[in-house]
Image (tube, chains in turn yellow, cyan):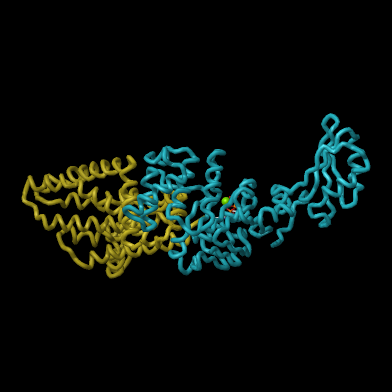
Length: 247
Length: 322
Ligand SMILES: Nc1ncnc2c1ncn2[C@@H]1O[C@H](COP(=O)(O)OP(=O)(O)OP(=O)(O)O)[C@@H](O)[C@H]1O
Ligand SMILES: [Mg+2]
């Protein structure tokens, strides 16, 4: 069977598994609630006096910090806990097909969550005349950011059979990727290190790269940054799945 | 079709499988026996490629499981020990998914799922969610997944575990029915099962093979094999035991039971001398006594005894191959 069909069958099963459990709906509701609260209250959506989704996208890296690891934590941990990994990995498929299939399912799920934020977009279009190109770039960047976090969650999920451990480690790693580029932190670092070094470290920060999308710029370097995180983390996932098939 | 060649697996300091070699051909049903922790499941996991071997090699239908894992696995049906399934799915969608993963689609998929449901008697729970099934049904759902694609090689880790007596019987006859054109390995702790369905059995202990032969060959290893139960009426039990003990060819006689005036004594043959002919000798030996002989019964030996004899904790695990 072709790799594409395998990936499709795995992704379909995973996606249905999300919606078969109430967790998915709870997740969606929490995500949409928080997105609304952050955008309209903390984000100062109305106070800004401009028609944009800046307040929404500005909070997204922090919102994703918890929600994406929550979506990704069961990916491999659950498979190991329930023993179904023995079934999955003795089927005539390559492990990477399962890794991609599972990753895609979770990514699609996050895509659905993002799509459900359309009322915010409708609101801003009713209230003013936003630059919808900037908004589209923001959504593209958000999906790439979600993908990067998700790949990290996939990696930590493959490390353990315990979903909670997987969640916590993923949050810590994602937080690290935020903090290295977070202005208060870079300012702090600047006191001890040369500006060149601070910049080098900040280059690994997701905020630095997410910024461009928020401004409506689709810079291939930023796209490449997120794609490399995904590739790297999924590659590590493959190594972990290979080496920790049992025990 | 299955070749296990000097396979070894170590977990930390513990050697779970130690230099194990055997082969299974089409038409054979191999019973895999051994005490808890002997290494049965570990061996099966290495055959299916779930865990890699430390040393040695495994090939299935000519494909090396490490070098050509996908070609090998295509030909394998595997029922893991805990019979894992995706419990959030219904029986039907789980089997449908398994069929898709085996490259089946459309009519072929429907047919395969239908056939597996029939063979494993899952008809009454097709649309039920797996997590609401009883243990036996869950087990059978996982078994259905293993035979779905009519594999040439079937590997089952305790397939009858947790099934009721009727279902045990069903699964045994299913295995027998499938056996002519497959190579089958299954592990079990139920020794009657081995006699009922296996063409050959392997006993492993602490990772090493301690016996490999047909069920009757294994039974012959029992010290009771070829022993004769003698039932005599109207004689003192001590006299019967003593007399039997003196019959040429009898190693020793042991009192089994006395019931009213009927005495039952077991006579063991001298090592390797009798070959099942002890009953005739005893008939002759007792003819002079004039006792009423109620019955004579040559024993086959029991797998139970052989199993215990070969896997006692104090026996040095030795390789005994017949
Ligand atoms: N992942 C693992 N890590 C460490 N030790 C293991 C692992 N898997 C198995 N073992 C050890 O290897 C030995 C063989 O285990 P295995 O599961 O193969 O036994 P078994 O013959 O299937 O026993 P049972 O009849 O109880 O199913 C045991 O001592 C077990 O503790
Ligand atoms: Mg076992």
